[in-house]
Length: 149
Length: 269
Image (tube, rainbow over all chains, first blue to last red):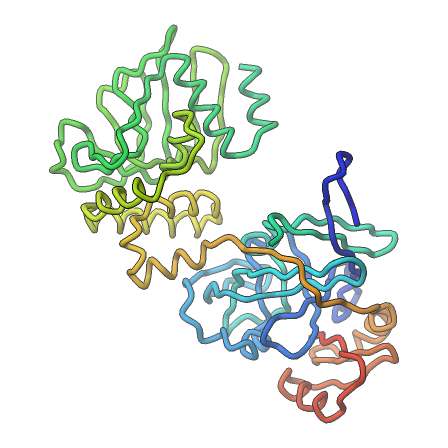
């Protein structure tokens, strides 16, 4: 899909991303990619956020996955929506590729009963093991994993 | 000093830490690796010993440590309880520090080298790297370690766990993981420590046979009409909106009834 100059693989999958926060009044630019959380019978959009220390799952999705009442490590995060206390739980998430290979990530995600926002893919516990790049002209998200099994 | 700056810029974190320490040793800051599985005073071995009288060839060594450092002096002969403190050492190290440290800054004023390290945490693997060892401990060695760790006092473990949580609160996850490696294996049976270990486990990634589909039309519908359904859950397909609801459960019920041929895209607006 995408290779380094020495021929080694950089990205194995490609997906079109939504470059727009569809729910915002003046559609601010964002990168939303399609994911399939394991244990959830649906495909959802998640916002890529490299500045977020942890991934955050929408509360209703976390509830559907059965991890909202888990016993993971307690964690407090600060966001633009406020400060929230929840837990770090294990979740398996597939980042879906339209071209090439999709990527299944066994991740650590923040879940909280109080979180009012969407689903974010953050750095620790998820993006830290993924190489990725975007082609803004084509709205393409390229990705590949480290140490692929 | 230029070389070290290049190291800082060009190398990864682990090799930077090792290179930095190696360079420090070459410049006269004496270090010592305690034999694996032994103890120094009441401190756990396999940790970095910065030996007192650590003088630089032409100047004095300076080590600044901020954050948590579990330290003991040799003279305390194992009777002291772990001390969590901050140390700003300057000049001679009159004492012998044994402990795990989060070193934020290390300056070697004999030259112009200045290191800004946010996440350097001493771990056994770190010392192995410094010592030039390239192999991982054997199972037998690990077993001996576990045995020796069983003597680690509970307060020590508690102080390490506290330090790990502190690092996590500051989002210094790499450092927290390194410190987690120093937790004795037998302590991992403790539910709270096991929970902490689970939270810090790095993600694993593998290729999946599952394929995504072309979402051009669905994305276009979201761009054009998404704002009209703000606050709602929507399911969108190639021909536009399939269903909407105020809760995800309601939306899923609708979808089960509608049974669309192609799996729709679900989004909360």
